[in-house]
Image (cartoon, rainbow over all chains, first blue to last red; front, top):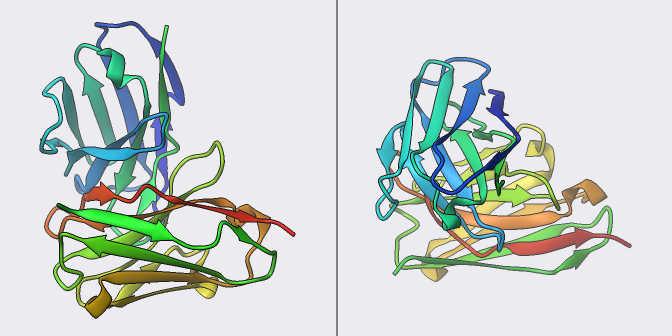
Length: 107
Length: 118
């Protein structure tokens, strides 16, 4: 199974700050990488698909990049609604696997 | 409007079988796959398994021997059955629709809370 290592596990940040979350796969995943946001009430929504494509309705302050084994999610300027959990997920091979998650907290 | 809704027992005894139903609307099960994802209390997301648009299935390696996913396309329902339940299976179980080309989980149910306890 492909292991997904997400860093950091938690990140204190301020409104307006630029933040980057990293995700490393245990082997190359050919850009088959998605990012999700989970709010405190448990609702989950997709943000980025296929490494760098913005899901419909997601603000342009979110962006994704990467290749091979290393990927990242960047939020250019934090808004109050962005403080949440973030997960990467690979779909290069079955079983699909998620990263351990990053909790973005208000500093 | 795409919707998914999980239903099932909130409490299951250890060693018993969990049965969950995901009822979908707004899309066809023969054109989209449905996946199950679970989240233990205070922990991250774990992919459980999937039933693809053609009816084939894929399962998490660690759960494969205990897991079965099936569907009834006429009722727009997907079923998850997991036997020999243990306390570690306590989690919120989500069903999700996967977009057929880019394989992103683009719609999620609200989740069904399952507690394994005697």
